[in-house]
Image (cartoon, rainbow, N blue to C red; front, top):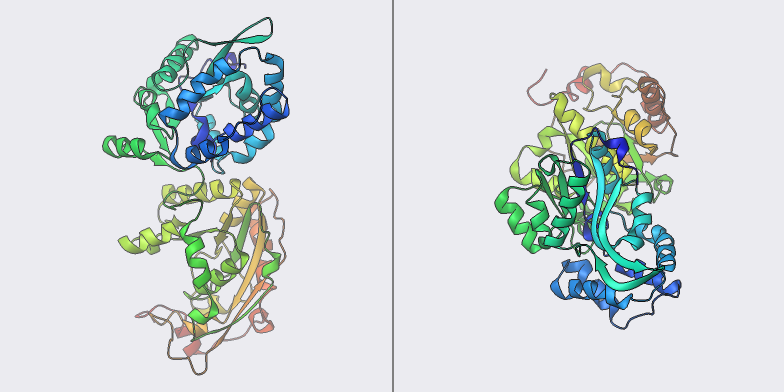
Length: 466
């Protein structure tokens, strides 16, 4: 791989493969490719070994088997193994952690070259590294003569201290300063490497690495989901909460929801709704529950201020937006963009806050440009959502919803529209198109200009305001 083009760079990012860059172990895919190529044969018990690895990470027995694999490969034709590596690329790409490409792109923008550092044999994994845009690979090399493997390893076995030695050799050869470099791994066996770089990252760490990272203050990351969102065996809090998010949870309101089938079940999606009440959260949550896929949502920083509430909201996929802080707002946009690039669904309220006074009754909706800019940079589909009647359940004038209305509950109307393409043009013009699409989903009374009464105007202000 061409590294000379990056000679001006001072640091590199060394990325582990299994359970770091990939969500699971690569062994199943690579072994399957070798079997298909006729190089190896299926091994009894291999699925159990890979399953244990997927859940608990690297262990001494599995690495002992990996070390012995070089002997087992004695006599194999190198060209066939390389061909198997090329055929495995598609299966490995499917295992890539959804946030990983965006994170690697961020490293690239910071001026670092990307190096895949793995125990996996070079001839098997190099095609995948090239497909993922890595600049180089530090991997175990099987010795070969006359086109066949000899059963020996050439250079260090790239695991534990051996991985550190191999990375040091690479860094020396490419004039890279490890003190300016990053290393990303899930395994406690990679502690020698992580402790030798200036910027260690514990990614999906095993128990040993998690303890060391906590003690040393190293960042703990998960490249399959947003920061703050826990996951056990692929299940997030969303999956536990979703069955309980039903209209019956709100007996003081009735819901008329239609068009949920318009939300794509896969790929990046921005779901954008108008904002009329604090009860909009409940209405949108019912839509999200029916969509059936985990969602991320952008919300004002104030919602994240109370300690317990902050943790719960983050666990459910909340992204805090501090509109009074330019840096905080930029970070929220970065997280939302990462989520979309990972193929997730992000909910936004383009108006940002509930309109007050006469603006609340304006049939022409006005929004901020964040949703349009996210759509332009990620190519996400944009689904407009029109909310109506939430203010009757929880007017802004009240501190809590009117839970006494169980005998005559007001109706909340929710309409989900067809996805629209905003494109990379002027974000202000694109926002106007989006807000017009949302407005078109409102009932006729929401699209008609009228003069509100003083009582109606008063209900649009928070308690204590005129």
